[in-house]
Image (cartoon, rainbow, N blue to C red; front, side):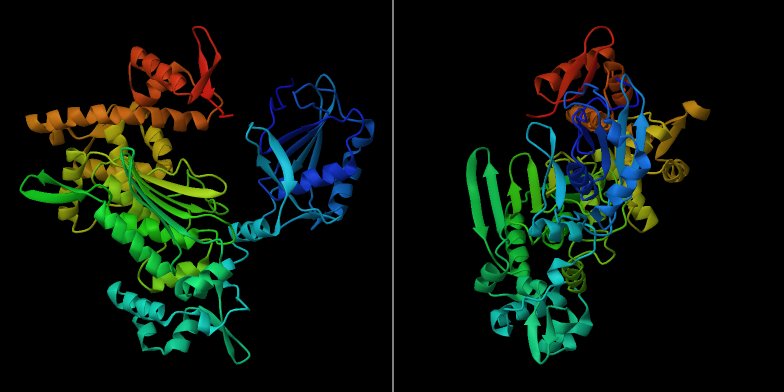
Length: 552
């Protein structure tokens, strides 16, 4: 196959045989599906198995085809078409992702792409509820702001309104709201809007203040689940439907009971460190309610087990947000009205940077960071692992924050924890690992070096950085650091898998460089990953290569 041609289909690549002339109507549908998903390339003249059979003669007139596609899509989609010369000519139709709404064929078909269980892509109809989700993802529609025209004030629970006023005081919310009467408060928070002289609740109003019967009637997609397991013993397994504030209080009450704390000594200080940082957990719970896709069936799920805490909600990351840019992306939510209300009540981080608190809660004690890797296109899943605090990192952070009189930045915490896990790292390695711009990392490193808790070795492109030795001079601390180093090895698998996801293949040499480990250690780690079905061999021999294993 021509090196300019892909080897297999994916979400953004589709092969179609053109021997018998692929129908024009099917081309329009494929273009619409690409535009409504992530964009991509449609190749005419390649069979499903990758065999090149060539583009049909009637599809070689590129300019006519481009105009034909634009005239048969609504709104018009302007594609790019290229003939690629291979063993036989292949037509590549490049479709841009449409970010201003939803695209249909002139025949009225609206489609999207998805990956089937066998790993192959397909085009399927986009249903009305999915259209709502799509518009929410693009930040073109706030489902939570829609009026529930069949509802009225009798569907609202005045006890929940009292709970809301109490939250304003408890969480230091917008005090201006306390001076408003009930109807003024409802309209100020946009929990209801006037339709003539009648005050009609919005979806957000029902979610915050609705009676349980109203929630089940008008937002039947919504429910909450709390599960607690110790080993295989189920301690808690409860599903419930409650207004948002009552549901958050109930979830937090469960977490308070099942969140153990441990005392650690840092010199003259004794700190109580919970398994899951309480501020971080509260922010994560609030985020789940704030960013949930309420047009989809599913539960907000909170689960605690021996490994850690999972908080998941229906609805994937919205447009422009990925796992890689999660920490640094401009904050914006799926349900602006709900998000704004939670901020004004004092429950959510007012800067919109709640994600900072979630990561800070683990990183300031040198614990394993929060993990969003199980998130999908239709689900956001946060996992906060149980892990042992790193005494060196905790001591460093506490002492520096005391000197500065303010918390260390999240970017600084990310860099410090990266150097703890992979010492003697270069700027480029650190920047790649923490998903930050190299210039920003350089500024952070320079500040840390000047303050004496990071040391530099070497010069020029060979310059490496590591945590200052002064933090590990005490014999007892060195022993603690060695014990923690064994725990850190558990993260090696996660780091290798994360790296492998972003590249075509990896080798044992890549793993040696990534983790700064020996050949034998890399070899043993590869065997473990293969045995665990996380990666698979694609090229044996002295230069063996591996790739992420796709689950079937």
